[in-house]
Image (cartoon, rainbow, N blue to C red; front, side, top):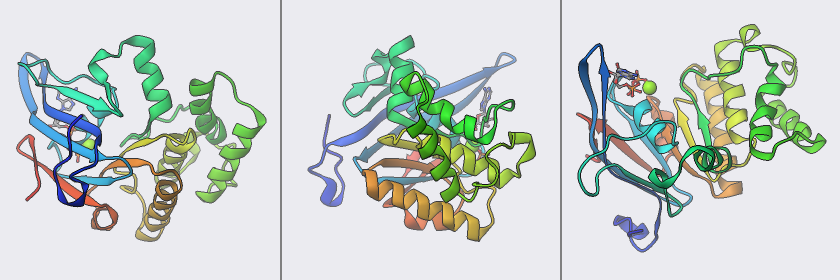
Length: 242
Ligand SMILES: Nc1ncnc2c1ncn2[C@@H]1O[C@H](COP(=O)(O)OP(=O)(O)OP(=O)(O)O)[C@@H](O)[C@H]1O
Ligand SMILES: [Mg+2]
């Protein structure tokens, strides 16, 4: 691991270290280059907001950081991601599943809630994936968290019976229920009115302060960007700090 090299964080060790990431999709034999050498370092406990116009590769980057997809292979040094000293390329199958379940809370842009499960079940299932079973304390924690998120009277609803903003809050609760050291959130306030979005940001701040969590948040919102420690922009497939 190397020093992060900015400001007073220069002597700390990066918690998340991504170097020279490339990602090109191939669709109908046409190549769609998206990431062209993205490098990013995030210190433990730091919150970084990732901005960039639609289609710039923000979700793609987040998926790579969360181990949901792999960067393209390249020459020496290309495509390396490490989190808390663990090289994601060295993780396969169950160890990658374990990394995702134990270390990462992921808020998907399109929620990805399980349609046949209730709100409460959608949250507790993340704890089940991590721990194998759901005890009364997990259920209690999920009920408490959903209450804090303003969903106390929606526990038995299925995702189709929720508004977009409510689904987004369920997705956030699911991401936080295991108290992950790393939260990767893809536009967590994207479908919320400013007041509800502000409440979610307060909850995220509280979570971060309580747990010293490290966060990478993709956003178009200036409110989110203002609360972050640092803002980076994805422009033309690379990170621009300008
Ligand atoms: N599976 C795929 N196959 C082919 N092209 C893809 C695939 N996934 C994404 N893309 C393309 O890659 C580009 C980046 O997509 P991505 O979802 O990362 O953008 P984004 O910055 O998150 O955009 P938005 O702000 O709209 O969410 C887009 O142009 C998209 O069309
Ligand atoms: Mg996106």
